Image (cartoon, rainbow over the protein chains, first blue to last red):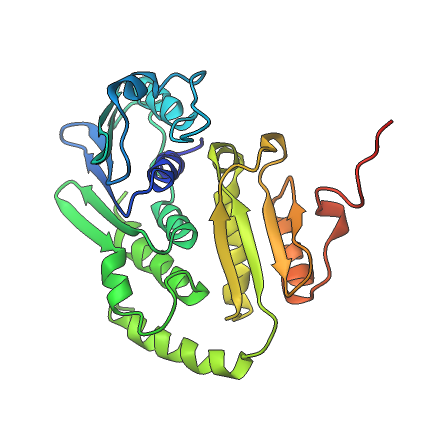
Length: 179
Length: 127
């Protein structure tokens, strides 16, 4: 994976496969504390402790669930490379939360990348899931919610090209000048 | 220029609706971009962006773009499947930005599939 937004896309795909109806993605860049933090929470079916323990083992997969593959292992590797770490909290029937932290200034910390493209791809693939994307940057906060978009659609489909273009431009305009 | 606001979507939705009625009855096409871990790592998101760009550039309203998981052919990612009207779906492999744009123009808009990028043509053989 070239950048963190691709890791996020991949992890959120896990959430969607786990039946999540709501997914929240929080990216916070805190340069004074030299931290970049990614938090992804979903209300999918969750994992039991044994599955969590194996979640970052690339050679462990349960074909029946499809919940775990290489994705978490790759994110953990990316975090460790940048002097950080990854944690998974999961409760069966409640959902899963993945937190990855990175040393912001670390030379091996991958760039955040194109989060607008990631969100657009998620909405295109799962138009019925509610996504929230919060971006915090040294005190600035931008929040994007598909719920808000849905309320304004007036008959337009969530995954129509017009809606997707709008989402792309909207997120880009509100975040791109910051990093 | 002022930044986009959520309310701007009202206007966009209105415009889209007026165009949709004009084109009603035209054949719909569906593009599916494969997006497992393998697809994402190989560049599926850029393929998706290329298709969205083309849809916007041609001001198309009746093409559906969606995503799916790993299709089991990880080494041939990025992949996309195009379904045009009632024709059989065609799977395209080893995609790049340029290939995606060509497929869009010839298959999605023109209904003529791009043989050189398709996974296979004809049936398998046993030696």
